[in-house]
Image (tube, rainbow, N blue to C red; front, side, top):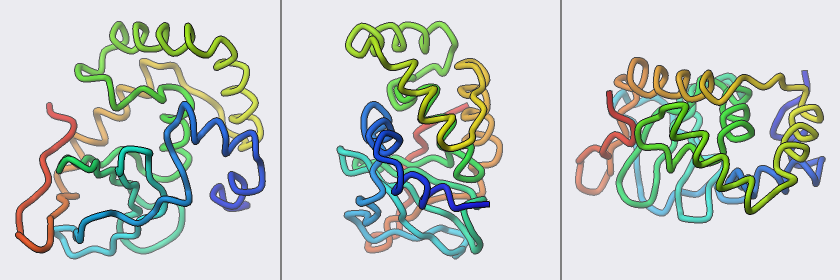
Length: 174
């Protein structure tokens, strides 16, 4: 199977959709602060967003590793198990950072706002998913999975601000 990172880099339309509205840029993998995982597992920044947040692969391996997102304000959460899951989240609910309650109703409101600004969002998203060979779950499914990963599995992925030794605040709470 081809690397999804390579596929994104090779396909301009996919990279543009992920850059916006996904706010995911493979050229922004450096986090502005020195951080590490409390478990001492490997941490590899591979993408970021426009507000200074970073996506990290956790542990050893390839694109199937757990992915932690750290914002620039001291918050972090495990958001996916593997790059395919992260990309599904970004394709289906690029507004996930604005969802505070992670409900389908809240996501539908945010979706409507995005669709008002970008009426071609759905066909662009569908083309990007097809180009990557990804099937897309519903908004409710993708948000439920995000909550499950962040709350149930995320407790084992605590990000530490290295210079001061304190942990980042959880972005997603139970």
